[in-house]
View 1 (cartoon, rainbow, N blue to C red):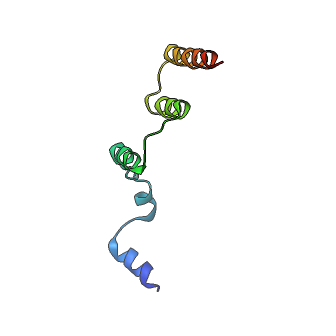
View 2: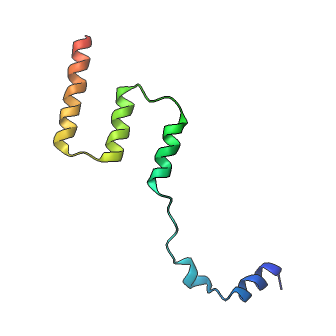
Length: 78
């Protein structure tokens, strides 16, 4: 028998029952720390907006307000 198989059988674990346990998920704070250390802050307003929308998931009314602000800013630049 293979050494790996012997080690598994001697551990007493059941293959099917143990694989259905939920996996451990890293806390979100570690992800935020990695992004904070990654480099300079983002200056593109569209990328900042997308990141904020993905993280906080604002309501439809808030999204419309943000879109109006982007449109007004683009019209003012013309």
